[in-house]
Image (cartoon, rainbow, N blue to C red; front, side, top):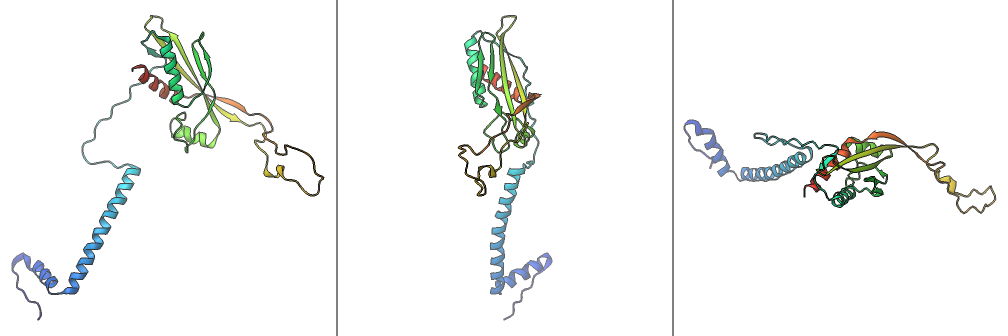
Length: 232
């Protein structure tokens, strides 16, 4: 029996749709499939959107909260402590936090010097000597090393110690060939056998390191860490 229903006013179309779905099993199947596909597509789109937001950073709606500007740190840093041993040991601890090895300690001159450390690249996030994307990219493309000098001098007014940080940045300059090719370790058949116990030749000459000046970003990072540990 064909479906017939009379609707009045603005609800004519909604009445026709409800009646058509009630009397047509095929339409109910199509509607069920459409609802199921929609329920699968919507969470998938939400997941993709959330992933992109977490990677690229999305601004949430609402009033933006003002960010606190970082407090600048002075170089040298005034440490209000008369305990020289405490100031010295905490400076060494901070250098160890940045994965620097101590090269020299001059107690008379009150200077701590680290051994040269090769700069960390983009694939070494656990090292903190390369501060910023530019420095990490530079260390990935070129051999860079840094040396940290920390000086602890008594304050003239007797308020404590002035801790100054100097980071020297150097770039490698190769005079000759850095390494031999793999053919240096092969034994050709057309020459007599030579009893050479070290057939692989290394770098032809030692490297030179050219100064690039100071690294202010690493100096600021070390001073910020020193200010934190001295405030404990």
